[in-house]
Image (cartoon, rainbow over all chains, first blue to last red; front, top):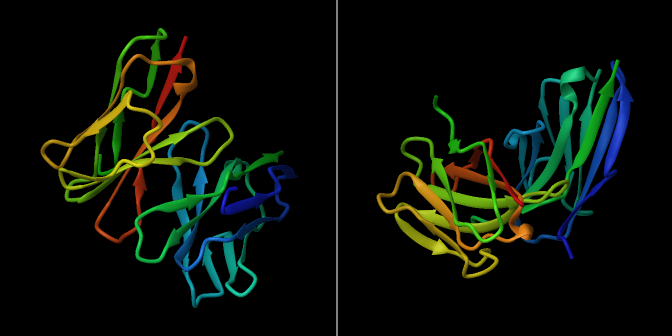
Length: 112
Length: 112
């Protein structure tokens, strides 16, 4: 069973609207949690990184939250743009380990 | 460029042929990782190098997969006697030890 679960699997939103993506993980203990953006045909690019003690981290219109008690994270996209169409992947790094645990990603499609 | 470079970007091979995929990491990055990404899924770990030493190859799916990094820089992932289930995107990532991984854009491998 995957240790990082993401929802929804995909979503479609209108340009200018907001959306929130969810990530639940069972990986423990973890060093940090990242959200990556992966455009079609490209490699993942890191958007945010949060350590165990951080609750929120912003990068422009992207805001990630982390609740280490419930092992949940979310990525909120504000005022979506067409260029936000991509797959968003939640990634957890185990403590004292180099291995990353990847979620399957949420595919976001922004329509004009 | 300063990023991780992978070649070729696309590779089509007939079942049974051998293929070699190349990764040029960011200069100075000690750690190098290979991942396999199936359509609609997150990347799956294949193998990890620290300099020229292959410290972990637990993710390689079979003995048909072989990776090397002889001089601690460029790495090659070789797949022998390819099968249709080998069709996927192969991602390479590099990092300083203990730091975030930077991904290349991958090689999309199609086995006919």
